Image (cartoon, rainbow, N blue to C red; front, side, top):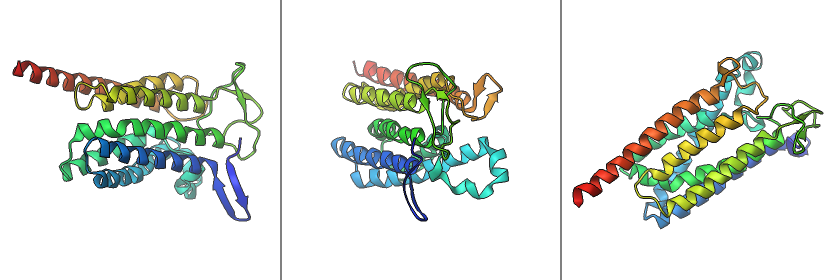
Length: 260
């Protein structure tokens, strides 16, 4: 693949950074557009997106550094070189959700309504950003003989060279794209506030859990050889998302029942 898209002397544009930035940009545009349609304060939603962007990058990088701490103990300066690859989505999600709750409470904005508005944006941002992983060679898959296996040959790639690997980056991108499509459909038919947001949490954690079994990169294990760090976090994400989904659903049904 092409980890470096443009290189002129000391000037380089890393493909990973370009796709991640593009994903964030399109996600923010979509969120702003949907905020206006939902009757939300568009400027405050844009401000929220800025806070989410910064916190997501920091959180995703911190979790990656924690998981790969041995590598960074030997190369501490690389901790800050996130544009070359090395962001763990769950780290970014946890940080972004925490900052979002703080921001929305501070500005007295409807938490679940905003969540439903921006959830599809998160998914489409992922779908685009994962192609950066593909070109950089990070998040690569295990060896395979399937016809759609990919072989990395660029010496700057983070993936093993000259062997056929599962294109897990593309699996993750397609998973996010399918989730995005479903959330857009669901948003027009939702029966309670928070339904779209927590549906995202449920679907992403399930898809990510399955795809993790095809990953071949060293990404840390919560239970060695059984559960990767992301799968371990994903279990809690799934359980919590299901609990919140049915709690809000029950609350809505109770409200309707009380009015009848």
